[in-house]
Length: 239
Picture 1 (cartoon, rainbow, N blue to C red):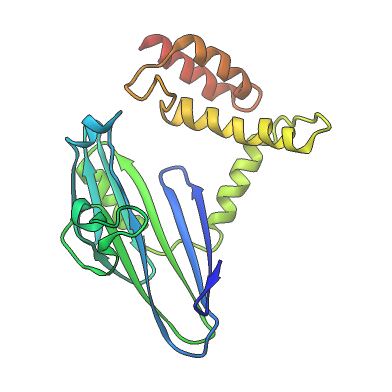
Picture 2 (cartoon, rainbow, N blue to C red):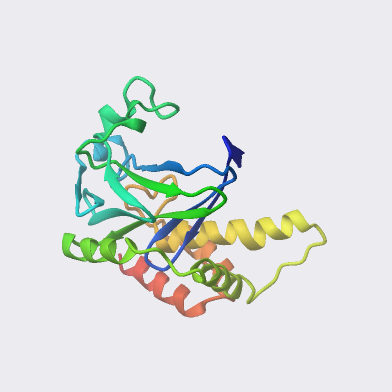
């Protein structure tokens, strides 16, 4: 993407313990620019809006935290001067998600982080956000401090290589490239994230496992990671 003399590239990728958002900004002009990058979180921490209403969100040491029915989530940032924005209601204001009132305001809320970065003419900067979860506040703070440092240049490649090694243990070839990518990539990732890493099916958000469906979906993962499948099915059966 490019506008106003800037070129912006974004990437989202999953590490083992956090979801990483990376924003690369290149200043194409010869003038020093101050750029603000904002990450807004509409915390749910549960199954539906009734759970969101009970969620507590706050900031501490330059990071955001949210606590609900299950553990503590955090959002950390790196790459510049980190500031907190107003709370959810004040941040969204009358403009809503398309044009929030809080884009230019500082505040004491727990739903948005702003990273201010100065970029000399012709140079680039990188801003990173990390979204994760922990069992308790102590662990969440430790993780937030760790992720508040710029990631290594190889980190994104590590995430890509890990996924390619996992998916490549069995390759589907149908003669239709789009179908191969859909069945061997998108659906595989959906099963891994929606069944094992989270219970994110439409009927699972409240905590249900759905044992029959787990058995069916685990067939796709069986040739790729049989030990993980065994562990997951034993958990489902026990629950």
